[in-house]
Image (cartoon, rainbow, N blue to C red; front, side, top):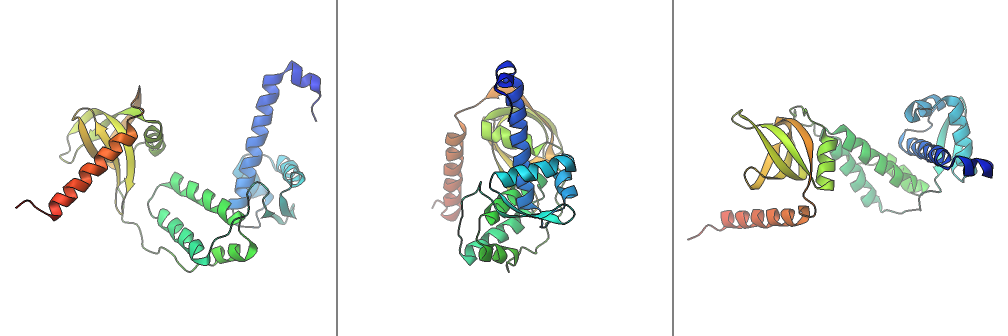
Length: 255
């Protein structure tokens, strides 16, 4: 327990230390949920970026906070009960559906998205009763199909994702299907994954219309500081409406 005088004299520094400690403990809990058990202290220390000595102290802190962590130094650790997550229950078919979806996610070639899915699934499994957790470990449904060879992506996918979420305008240099390079400002709306490519749906300010860009053909991308909030939802609705109309017209051509 830190003395009250230290809090009063250095509040910002103490706040930063507490935030760093909380973040470190959260990363350790995530690693315990996600990594195959038992997890060695060395692996946990590498995963969380701390020393093994600090890791042992953090394990003790988590245990004092109510986390049931079995194991010891030289043996490995298993998170058997996580007080931060409420108990959940799924049917066996629901568990199979989650595992199958996770297998499909592994096929799309986006490492950061795959890691996020694995972390989320680990949190879900950590809240299941023992019987259902074992069912998740021995699911029968798998996605065995190999991904087609995808062209490499040269730009930061995380930047594209955040630009869509935050409704931030982007400037891209793009190599079109005729191998002509253009530069244009776009309002990114969403990403679409398919078997062999990754597409970016956007409203192109140059064309004043919707365009779908092959992400692997984007040469460079940067934020230009402009926002198009709150236009994303209305633009997506317009795109869906136009797409449905075009599908309907194709199915029922005019007489």
